[in-house]
Image (cartoon, rainbow, N blue to C red; front, top):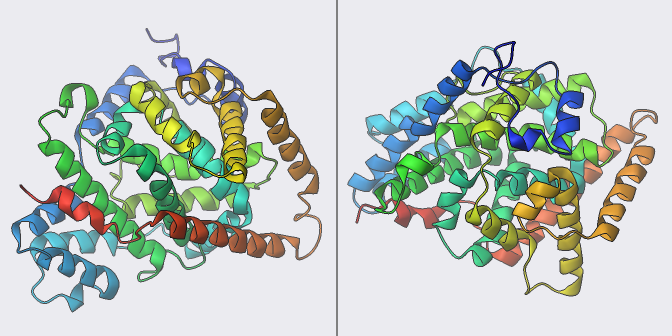
Length: 402
């Protein structure tokens, strides 16, 4: 039933603490959608990424390793380095190498510096604790994750691969054509298409209830996790971002969205657009189930960690519980540790008081450099420990036609 203004009522997830309070506080204006807008959004749940899907089909029909080698050559050296490239490869690289008229490199550079400044708060709390854990509430998006390996073995690797990709993208110059961020985005896009091809061939994939695997609505949702959720998660821990910085961050992820194959109609152009997208995701995708619980437990409740790692993981769970609220946290099986929740709140208060980079000359630059060093060290160690692979080649076998 629509409200008197033609807008739908808030979904259940946004009618409970803390979303009930922080969405009206942080968002600009009424972010609710009409029934017609909801219906239009849902059509993207049946749409994959045609350009990337075509490349996967091209690789599958060619002799083993030939098509993938062509893709890798084009990624690392450009399409001109590929002899007689297939039309699917040409179409893909024409799209990703196109620079839209609105692209502002000064904003990309500023957004990278902002991301560097978030340091361990961003990479160690906001990304895994709010963005990824909150993303598990979208149970249809969870199905490919559950269907592609041992969760407890894969969860740390996936987290560290995602964190490494995120840092590659958000480092200075990371979106230059042959930088690690840009090339990594193309490899992740291909990996998504490979998993989509594999899931589509599974006889047990329930298209009616689960939609197209890794569909456009879900890709757009992932985009907002890296932009909006990450900013909000860092704000909750006492960090400040001015309007210019926020605008740069959303401009940055608008461009990343195009590189990642998100349909242009879905890519938010601003923070206001991203809040509206968040509402639609909450309305249509946040339906947690048993798979949501399994994924959250694989990330938050590992028994093989040493005592220090277990304490860090428990602190992360306390943060997630505060950010997602009691109902969502209970659905994900997150422990209700009041002492650690108090510690998270105390840390946020201390960060707020100590955030002097606006007042002391040079402190912003120092915070950025220290944050970059800290997060690079964090993910380098994690990737080495979990055996992560920045090429994502292990997914090649998924897309091979049996």
